[in-house]
Image (cartoon, rainbow, N blue to C red; front, side, top):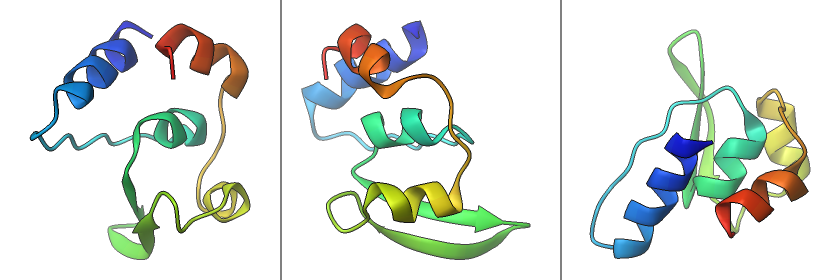
Length: 76
């Protein structure tokens, strides 16, 4: 959680690119502006956060903790 909080804090400063590699769909949804999905080193999907719905992301990733709890902790 501390790493995600730090990423959000740096992200709010702007003018910086952050690459987050994760298998956790919820973490990605809370942080990402855009996505690139890989499988065995091949791109299997990509798009901007506002273009991809939760179902699209779920089809391409595995989940994690409850999103409401993470939003509260990150102040998202």
